Length: 117
Image 1 (tube, rainbow, N blue to C red):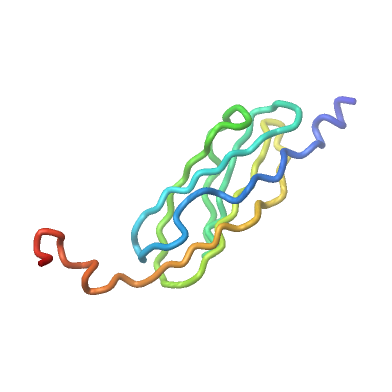
Image 2: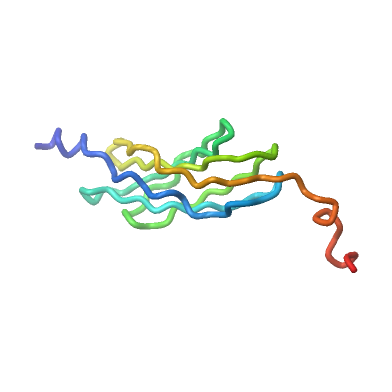
């Protein structure tokens, strides 16, 4: 029975919450909520869709928010996903993606607000 408990995965998280559009080099926070069916604490990590992945968050009770931030260096369409791991080390499947479109800053975006007419 103990072996069964250690092999049960956390539930697959829903897509992370965060922006769906942004500009290069701007840092954006993303939040995920994960749960474990046996009530173990849960860690989360984010796959940013650009070849980078966050570190695992600190463990928290199931249903607690986990937030990490990221900035992209190139314009494009990125799929941000989250994965959960319980305190026994068992990992969930990756969540469905939140699609984020990153664009280059326009000339207007680079002009300080006080200088805009």
